[in-house]
Image (cartoon, rainbow, N blue to C red; front, side, top):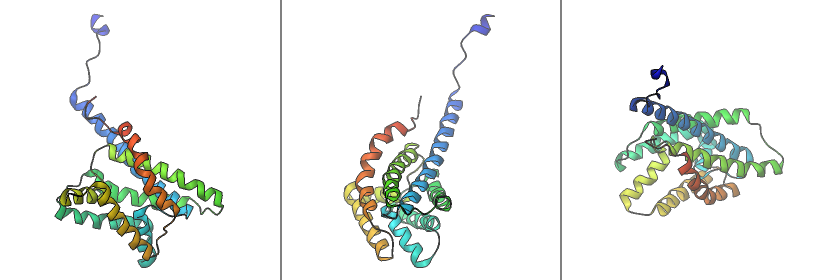
Length: 213
């Protein structure tokens, strides 16, 4: 009877590590899927898309292919730029390329076109807020940065420039190129660029998975 009343032994470190990895993978995939959904919401708003999506749209409209396919191909090409920057991808990096591409195409397939201006305007803050939560979720698992994030951090390390300067320079080039190719540049693009950092910052600590519990 005494044995029955004794407290249960704490989980073994291997079991705790396995549960943490399981949570991290679930959060990674949910975050990436929601990221693709947020991209689709801004596309349906037709008031401008995220900076990199201006490029993706422009390429898709110029050479063909779905937004998700172009996003994945561009992500894979950006990964090649990691080689001279000596950046190392993680499982999250590879999943970022594949899952977001699949998610945005699947979301666009089920979300109908929106014509009412009030609804289109509403999609913008919803899409940006969802993207912030999705970004914090996949970054918080610490399984590897996305290809574009890794490009930025690699250039910061190599050039010694500030994160703000390097990121701004990359996105200006990306947006300008995408706009020239026919991508949608609008008020939502500007709002996203201004709001995404302040929105992600308070969410990231809440969604970061600790190494120990």
